[in-house]
Image 1 (tube, helix red, strand yellow):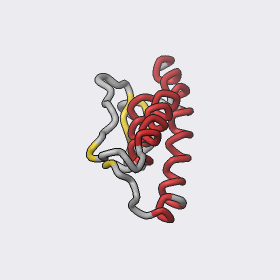
Image 2 (cartoon, one colour):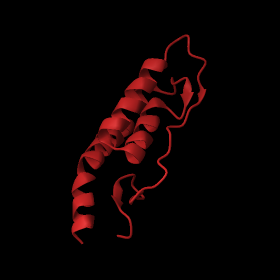
Image 3 (tube, one colour):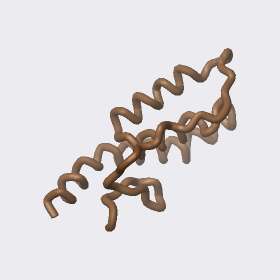
Length: 101
């Protein structure tokens, strides 16, 4: 019980970052159109990286991806690295929650 509560608290920063990205993808991203050289788009890559690795590491991976997206990049398919073992799951809306809830 305490372990689940601690995990829930640790997932709060991750879910806050996910919330910001979901708002960005719904409001700002459509204004730019489909301009990303990579698949998935940089915002979706960052969203998945945060879901898999947490707020700090995920934002770092997303920033590195944005730095690689330039006119001289070849682009292509570039998924974020997946986490091998996780004690959480991604819900229907994209937020992360403790497994088994």
